Image (cartoon, rainbow, N blue to C red; front, side):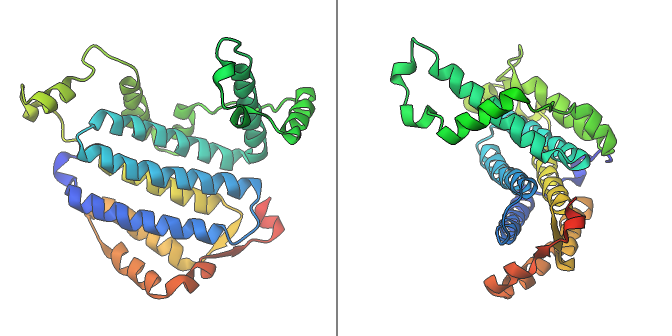
Length: 278
């Protein structure tokens, strides 16, 4: 991925237009996936896509109130999900990941319930485990799921997206935890005491976050147990073209898809043969 210079960024309005069309298309993909009985694989993939869409929407709202640091934090979280998704697909570890997640969340609830100082204030129904969950946990204590989170840098190298790690994930990590100059830009924005011109062009985080949301959608579509129609691939390529030269061809294709009405949703994809899902 080549480094993008400031002069190559689109206007905020252009990114906002992209976000609205992209997220609308992403929702159509989610409806298409929901046509079929969900496997563990496709359930996790569709949830990753849904998370990316909502994070991108949140990113634009934060950018509009000049909360650029939290934009970078969200961008870092989005990259984490891209690298996780790729690793799950490459290693086909969706079942392991689901079981590991269940164990982690079960243990967290149990730890909270066991806090004698505060557990009387909890909404007991929310933190209570069902008989099914207890039985599942008992079984998994005999054979604990052997899964570990992937190293983001290693996944980025495999995906040939090392710059996204170096200038996104790694840099964004420095903004998650307090630094000595934490809030410096916020101070200037809130008080107008200082030079705003000395700060970098923050369209970079909008540009890169929009691109990563697209990569998550594309990764999910390719990695799902479904067969997708050609026009889905076509619009994904047109979305990508927007970042290369500002092309808005994606808008024309999207309007053609929408013109077919809700009946187009069942035509997005079909269930793949069992051999394809393996």
